[in-house]
Image 1 (cartoon, one colour):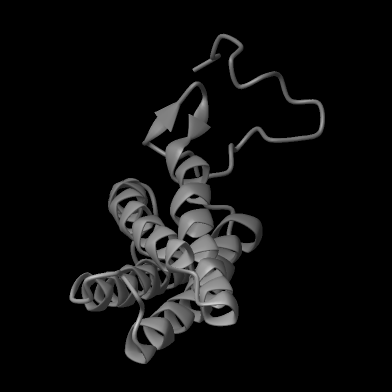
Image 2 (cartoon, helix red, strand yellow):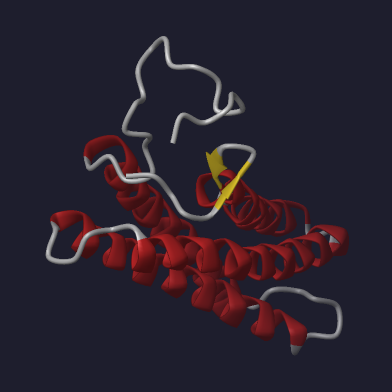
Amino acid sequence: MRSRVRAAGHAVHPILIVFPLGLLTTAVGFDVLHLLTDRASFAFTAAHLIAAGVLLGLVTSATGWLDWFLVVPRGTRARRVGLLHGLVNAGVLLVFAISWLLRLAETDWTPTWPAIIAGWAGLLGGGLGGWLGGELVERLGISVEEEAHPDAPSSLAPSRR
C-alpha cells in the first residue's frame, strides 16, 4: 500500500521518524551522563534535545496519522496495529513533554527523578512503538510499493501510473 505523504518517491513518515527517535534517545543518554558526572551542560543538553524531539515528533506523527486515515484499509489488522502504533507514540511524546516541563521548573535544567523516570518510560515506549511500526511495514506491507522487488526501477524514475 503506497503512502500518500511522499517526497522524492518515498514515504515521508519513515524518513522523519529517525529525528525524534534519535533526539529523544540521545536525551536519555545525556541524562545518564549527567547522573554520572553531575555536569550541568549534560542536563542542559538533554532538556534541549527533548524539546527538539517532541516538536519533530509532532510533525512526524502528523504524517503517520495522515497515512493511517488515507491508506490503511478499515477492518484490517493493519488498521488496529497502526492505531496502537500511533497511540503508543503519542504517549511517548506526552511523557517526554512532561519530562521537559519538569526540567523547565528547575533554574539550571537539572532533571528531577520524576523527569528522569519519564524519559526512561518514553524510551521503553519508543521501543514498543518502533516495533509496532516495523510490524506495519515488514509484516503487513503498509507503505510498501506494490511493484517492489529486487530489480525494481528507482523511485525517481518516471512513474508508469
